[in-house]
Length: 152
Image (cartoon, rainbow, N blue to C red; front, side):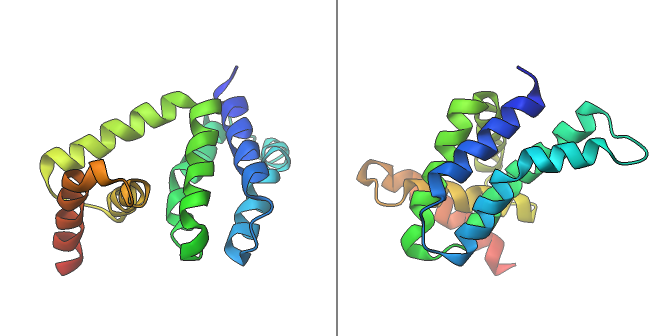
């Protein structure tokens, strides 16, 4: 299966999983996700015609930024939407999670957030871990990294 196909499947799984959530931001995410194949088809018609790897890179960047968009979702739905994103990723494009985990580890080992994208990656991890009593130590470390970034 191509990277484009894996990403399309991830977007669609995510859109299907969040379709019933009554939040305007979630509805926007759902529409974006469910329209991914149309987006790809339209991109392939552009002049100059993008290569499949360019289309895949764009889809992957959008997928990477989706947790940032999820931050705007109402607090009562955010964890459910993050879980849907993570589930869609693990089912359709698991190698993405491995790469993202490596990026997370680099930030944690460094003990410092350098970019806004890293901030959102750490924030996403906090959202995933909150409420898990066995994750208190890890959460405290992530909170301190976030606090240092926000204080600058």
